[in-house]
Amino acid sequence: MKLRVNDLAVSYSMRLTGEQLLALQGLSFDIDERAFVTFVGPSGCGKTTLLKVIAGLIAPSSGEILLDGRPLRQLGHDRAMVFQSPSLLPWRTVSQNVSYGLELQGADRQLARQRALDHIRLVGLAGFEDSYPLELSEGMRQRVNLARALATEPALLLLDEPFAALDAQTRLFMQLELQSIWARTQSTALFVTHQITEAILLGDRVVVLSGRPARVKEVLTVPLPRPRSMEMKRSAEFNQLEERIWDLVGEEVAAMGQFAHLASGSASS
Amino acid sequence: MTTESAQPSGNERGSRRIWWWRTGLVVAFLAAWEAVAGLGWIRPIFISSPSRIVQAAVWLAGKDLWHDLAVSGVEFLYGMLLAVVVGLLLGIVFGWYGSLGAAVDPFIAGLYATPRVALIPLIVLWFGIGIASKVAVVFLGAVFPILVSTMAGVRAVDNDLVTCARSFGATDRQVFRTLALPSSVPFIIAGLQLGVGRGLVGVVVAEFIAARAGIGHMIAVAAATFQSDKTFVGILILAGTGVLLSSLLGRLQKRFDRWRPTQR
Image 1 (cartoon, chains in turn orange, red):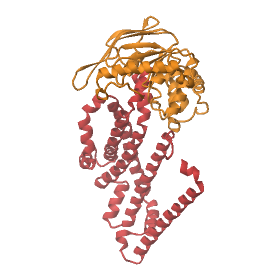
Image 2 (tube, helix red, strand yellow):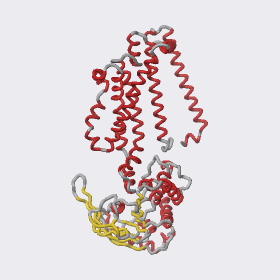
Image 3 (cartoon, chains in turn purple, red):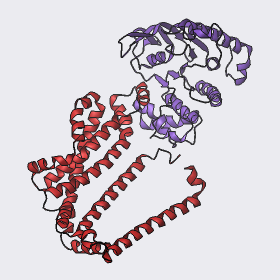
């Protein structure tokens, strides 16, 4: 489904001072059906807020979000979110966790069970259906988290830095795997990350957000063919794009003035 | 988990050795007790002795012991049942509706902090010296730990999980049923453990003060008439009951903790 975000604004009121804090302002973009779009921006610019608004967890102050031309309902069955922490129910087995989303949406038990098993296989956890989350590694738990979202077969898959807590190796493998899993679904994916290489490796397009209040600074198309591979990270196109995005993010960080003492040198990971 | 599976023989031998030590210590303690009383070092009227206690138990079994047990048991059971029902229900309500819980806090905190035995004379005044006053004392002793723990458990639900459930469109009812309730189970069991202890104290103390039958009554009468062997029979019954109930609850806890990896 085609997603259109139009002139979105979100403001929080600070609990202590009552001061209004703008998280997003005048944010607009379009996402094609079945696209994989990644979002990068300076830390604390409101990336997570954006996903939460699209998920329906936060109400926007103004603006609209349209899915195939129709406004999103408050909390629909057409979206699923993958959080940074696995957020699994520790007292439930893997398969009970994967069917949890469907269960909350009121799906038939039999269907939920079957879909759970299918998606456990899809994320490569066959054989762990009856394990408990605490018996799994962090990477495996994040797969369960992903399977739970995918099992609801959402039109929009919202991923909030799902690999941030993983070690570098696991992270790379999970990136490649997410790509191949997503290719087998019908979902449009919105993926928020801090890691620019991750954003390029996974995205059809990379949306660079400005510092707070976040708006779209630039949208870049990733010219690499799919499926993406590890080797592509060393290609010239990849590196050019990476540099370009670093410059854009660096400008925003500089504009926020937080790291003024580092002078004007370009940032690096 | 790892150490146990790595060296099963060593650990087994270790636990068997502990078992021998424990048994040996108990036997030695009983023998020393018997000897001290038998040799007349301390007069049996004060400390009795294991053999005298067994004799007293057999004698009592042919007399009022069963009646006393039944009376105390019924008092304890009714009081506990009432405490569990009221404690769980109010705990859940006060935990779930936070501002309601905060509003009634002065009552809960105040009554929880008051030594409940101080209320016994008043309760006897209201309910008489029959079973009703003891049920009330057991109830008052047990209800607060259960209520307070349940309330804490319902409040302790993980916010990340709630946000996640909400993102799937969970209703309040679903959040309560699938998150708040299961995550408060360990708290509830801990509250029950405390409550059972308080309930037992309640039965005994209430029977000391005003009763016509029951284990506490028996202990009080026996001690007042220098029959320490009978007193010890009562004490042992209470100790056994406490151990039994708390091990049953421990087992219940384990059942609900299946998902927690064993030892790390």
